[in-house]
Amino acid sequence: MRLDIGLIGATAIAERAVVGPGSRFDDVRVRAVAASDPGRAASFAARHGIPRVHADYAALLADPGVNTVYVSLHNSAHREWAVRAARAGRQVVVEKPLCLGPAELAAIREAATAGGVRVVEAVPTAGHPWQGAVRAMVEDGRYGRLRSVRTDIRFGVPAPGSYRERPELGGGIFRDCASYWLQAVQATVGLGSVTGRGTGRFDGPYGSDRSFEARLDWADGREAVLHCEVGEVHQARHTFVFGTAEVRLRNFLLPTMGALPLNLVVRRADGTRQVLAFPPVAYYDSQLDRVRAMLSGGSPEDDGALERAGARVELMASIHQDALRASERQTR
Image 1 (spheres, one colour):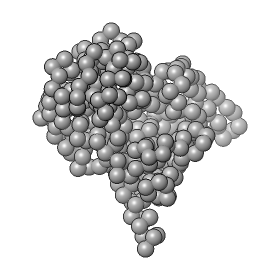
Image 2: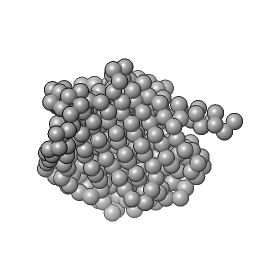
Image 3: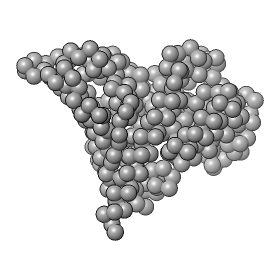
Image 4: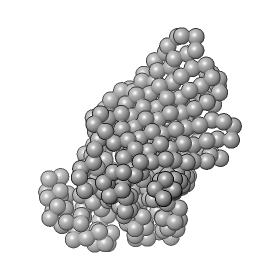
């Protein structure tokens, strides 16, 4: 299937995730763009050689030359435009997080069924070979039973007034990081039969959370913990603790840096150390390649992709609500 893409949002992430990588695939074309500011859309189109600029998002959805829509608006607008695009019969790619809760998820599922289309959440770190390598360690027990997963993420301070500081627009550090954490845990350990909870410091601008701790617990005692925060020095690290080894992955999230290698460092209880090196991967090129395969029905990932994204959304929403309730109790 050729992807004739319309961009809902003239954004930096659309530039990095679609426009740039799309130029490297013969069956991908960016045909149109729309933005809340038509002048910004026109400037974006001129800069990237996009042939059509639409006055608004609805006009883009009516464009017969567009069969796929990429949504990169603030998080609280994802549901509306994913639903409207799906009902218009367009394949849909939505920036993470797919949406903000179960009701929004149900609307997207219904629209995808009604439109006969697929809806894909864009998580650039998904599908990296390191995830399969760790899953194999979990499944074959070579280092004993997995006990815990620890993830640490630190993102730069958001631009003042941006949606990342605005809870009503789906902002806050947890919603910015949750998809990366949950997708990694889902791909390596699975999210079946987990319970989630969280605590956050909602003391940022507009009441946004700038530090957040989230936790998943399995009935057999395993746990996965995320600590995320706003800060000056970027950080993205996973640590998997097994019975006889600790497996670490640093810098798993540097998508804007181009193709970078990743290494899993295995430190065994007997003091020996092994490094599993993976070839450099350009995250956004890899993501668009996966999306191409999924939307054409030619990828095993397609089966259940929306359900897997849905499981992540439901956990994210539950954990976020748990933290909000805890914060409200503390301020009474």
